[in-house]
Length: 500
Ligand SMILES: [Fe+2]
Image (cartoon, rainbow, N blue to C red; front, top):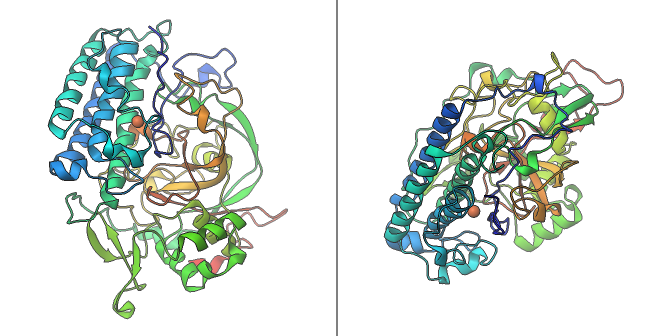
C-alpha cells in the first residue's frame, strides 16, 4: 500500500491554506543527531490514542462550523475566494477516504464517484457552487461513514518504522487531522467573510499581562548557525523537512506582533498614500485594489467617539478596533510597506524560525519557542478557543529564550521569504502537496493564528499564500539588521521607536 497516484489535494493556494504531507521515514543523512531528538519514540498505543483524539477534535470543530448554519447558507458562496462550506465538508471526507481508507488502509472505495467533484485541482473555488455537490445531510452521512472506516483502519494499523511510510509513526492519521483542521481554519475565514448575524461565539482572551507595557520593543537574536526544519517531528509535512543548518547573522526582531495602535499610526501618517513605502508591485496593487486599511475595517461615523477612530466587523459583530491587539487581515504588501515606513523590514523565514526555536543555552532547536512541550492554554492562543488574537504581550510563559512573545498563535506572521524547498526536500506523499507551489509567487507565513489547531502548528510549520491575500488570519512583526558593533542591550539605534 503506497500513496496512490491521486494528488493529496493541497487545496492549493488557489484555495489557500491547505497543506499536508511529510515523510514519516528516517533519513540517513539527517542533520539532527538522533540522540538529540526532541521527539521520544511513542508506543503504538500512545500513537493510536493521539491519532484518534486529533481526528475527533477536528471533527468536533468541523461540525461546530457547519451545524450553526442552515442548508441554504451552507451551500452559498460567501466570497469567490472561498468554497461553499458544504464543499469543504464533503471534501474533508473525500480526502480522508482517498488517503486513509484506500491508500493507507487498503480498503475498497466508498464513493469513488465523488473524487472528481471534490478534487481541489479540478475546480477553482469560484466554480464550486455550480457543481452537483452533496447537500448537507448526505455530506454529513458521508463523512461519518468514512470516519467509521478510518477508525477501523486505526485499530489495526502497524506504526513501525519499517511500515508503509504513510503509516509509520501514524503519519497518515496526523496528515488527515491536519488537513481537516486546515479546512476548519479556511471555513472560519469563510465565516468571517459571511454577511449576517453572528453565529459563532467564544470568550475573549484575557487582558494583556501587567508587564506587557514594559517590554522592550525588540529583542536581539545573536548571529550564528542553527538547525532549521525537522527530521524527527513525526507528523511534520514534507515542506518542513529535512533539518539543515542555516547561518543567520545578528538581527533585531519585534518582541510582539505589530499592534493595531501601531498600524493606525501608519495609516494616520499617510502610509497608504505614499509610494515611497511600497514595493512597485505592492503600490500597483494598492492603487488597483483601492486598499486604505486592513480588510474588514471602516472609519467610525464619529471617529472621536471611538478610541483610534476605526471599527471592524468580526464574525458578524461590528466593534471598535482594539488598539492593543495584533493587526490582522493585512496582505504581504501592506506588511512590507508598514515595515519600510517604520525604518525596518519583514524578517526572513530563517530569522523567524531561529527566533522561535533556537535555544542559545544548548544550541539545539526547540519544537516551540517555550520548549518541546505541546501547546497549552497558558502558552499560546490556538485552537479557535477565542475568535480573535490576544493583546500584544500576552502569554509570557510562551516566550522564546530571547523574550519574543506570541511567535506561536494569535496571528500568522508574514515573512520576507518566498516559499522554497528546504535543501534536500523530497515530496511526500505527492508533489501536489507542496512542490508545485514552490517559487516566487507565494510568501511564507509562520507561527499559526488563533484559528489554527495545535496539530497543525509548530516551530517548523510553514504556511504560504499570495502576497495580495487578506482574508486569512495574518499579521506580522518587523525586524532589522543589527548594526555592526551596535548595542546589544535593547537600547538600540532604532529609528522607528516612535511607531508604538
Ligand atoms: Fe483540502
